[in-house]
Length: 49
Image (cartoon, rainbow, N blue to C red; front, side, top):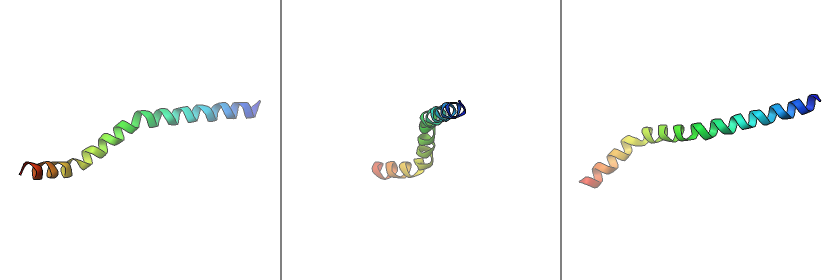
């Protein structure tokens, strides 16, 4: 009975982790884009020249 509860809890943790990854991966990628933005601006200014 204790092992069943452990497996259930483990499954819940896995679901929570996947939800966190699913919801926060766009946020993390947008943060990376914001950090890379100056270099993209430099590239666009070079292209405009």
